Image (cartoon, rainbow, N blue to C red; front, side, top):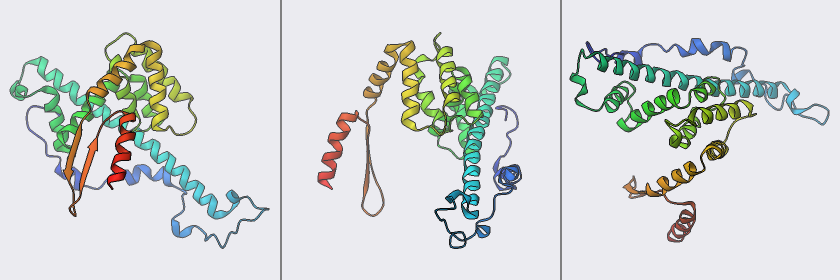
Amino acid sequence: MVMTGERVSTAGLWSSPSVWPVLLEPILAGIPDSSDIPNSSDTPATADVPLADGARDEAVNESLCAMIDLERGKSYLAYEMYGQAWRVAQSVRRVESSGTDHSWLLCDEHAQVAARFAHCLSLSQRAAEELLSHAIALHTRLPRVLLALRDGQISADLVKVVISHTELVDGREIAADVDAEIAVELGLHRGAWLWWSVATMVDRIVFRHDRDAVRERRRRATDGREMTARPTRDEMGRLSVTMSAEDMAVAVAGVRRLA
């Protein structure tokens, strides 16, 4: 979608038939409907018959495998989403350099592109800017991690952990090596990743190349501490605080005493 010329309405795209049922049909083919799964009383598990050999358990296993494929599909969709966001950003830069139309440059380029995302996807401006920032980071700083996302080796949520934990190597010579080593770790890992395991793995690799980078990220996180309080329904409220793990343990104990 170009940034100049006639604007295209995207409202109709949300109400038109979705293509995804047809695209996902090969993945879901052969997975029985829940009404077709035998009742557990019809296939009792005994000492002579392993649990996974029952018809019901076989159907459950097939569904679990399909869920894994669908989860990896979410990674591929995120890869495509970041790719489209990157293409829009590149198009904007080409328009700017051509000098054909500067009317949209009245506001910051990054914020203006994000505003278009926010309008099309019904996102907040902050969420749209985050989407654009992540797309830029993956295509410039972490291209091999981006390919791992495409291949389903890391989830769409956890790739954000990689992005945030490599911010301090952005634009540096070590960035390519860090990206390559993270991609290797993602390819060698068996099973699904956990948040803490991804964070630890990335920090270890960054620390190997620059010991001060991890410490600097910790310092910035400490300087960025904040607290927000907002009312909720039924005369209740929500308190959100960012602090060190040590201070959090003390705060939790105090809040529990008040509760």
